[in-house]
Amino acid sequence: MSEPLTLVVPAELVDAIAGRVAELLGRDRPRQESLSPWLDVDGACAYLGFGRNTLYKLSAAGAIPCRKKAEGQGLRFHREELDFWMEEQYPRIDRCG
Image (cartoon, rainbow, N blue to C red; front, side, top):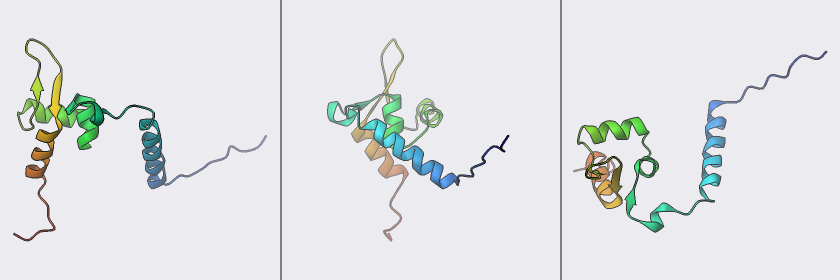
């Protein structure tokens, strides 16, 4: 009986592979940005690069622009409002001011 093969894969390689797989999977879906300026939670997370917990915490605190359906659930985010928010929260650091 032979010994099992052990393969050590650097974390950077795993991250690169995961990113490439996500990119390839995204090609099969219609691009949401071409359909509507409105994003659901998953779309906003992908757009901003945030996790769901972070986005929900920011929304609950009123720290990020979002909309909630009257008498119901379901947050929606508008791309232009998120872009403006990002500009305010993450100012460019390459400009002296």
